[in-house]
Image (cartoon, rainbow, N blue to C red; front, side, top):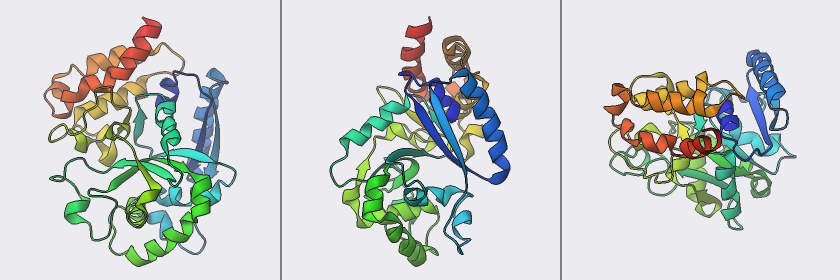
Length: 294
């Protein structure tokens, strides 16, 4: 995920990563990011922090998946940070971070966060068919990509809303922190800006039929439920492996775009439902890297 953000940093913005990690992972994060910073000293900085949850409440750490609920407490943990883009670790950027960051400018005076819908089609929607709690809108929202105006969230007293929601609904939620966020925005819909689906593109958008038109390319690829590491939808694995194999500060045209173009020609990709959106996956990369490096 971090490598993809650096790979697509077309505008050479100064990126700053804040990483919350288990104690045993901090050293490996530091070593790898230190190596990359040597190669790109002007393009990014980083801070690695241990996990931090409210005291005397072990439930948060195991809510849904380890660390997933950490983002619920960022407004109080990062007091000096005004705004941030939160992403799950199973995210790959296929466009510059600046593209999604620009949505902050579209917030009205009351909006504190931005999320993409959980589904585009009610026939396969999870919340409208199975949820046992309130949720945002008609189909809910997905929490894997979330713009957060922390200053406004602190004024809103975000955590004072989160804690009682967890207490009331903890026996009725399935997706942990995402469900809590959905419940909060059900009661405060005016606080949420809704992102286009191409900024949180998941297998559900293409595995049955294409339900997220992306004429200008898929911006952020979300391999939730392990799709980056499975063969269920080979397009997701092909994109993950192309980023994984790319070496920072080498030619992205030769070492990322061309291998990815070749990978999506594989019969397994072409014959899959999600393979039909392969051109949308490489649309932005083809414009950025072919122009710059060919």
